[in-house]
Image (cartoon, rainbow, N blue to C red; front, side, top):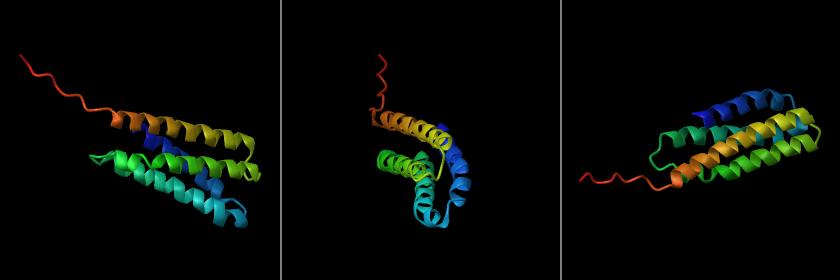
Length: 117
């Protein structure tokens, strides 16, 4: 599943960076970002196996937005450089596009087979 793989890639990339943050940011912004990343991954994994996916998928747009804002704060506080900020933003945008596509697919009415004559 591409969205889950992209999320795992973001986590694998971000966690080492977040663990190296200065103490004053690691236990505030860093921990919150880690929690949001893990929550996103867990909810995506759970949605995959649920019959009704929308109740799980819809709130994830807000979580993705939080991850985006927290990443922006890391850059604005000079905790990550522009290159890392751009890379993280690209990964988050990829996840966002895949999430939007999955939501759209789930919102489409199921195709009803035509009766055979």
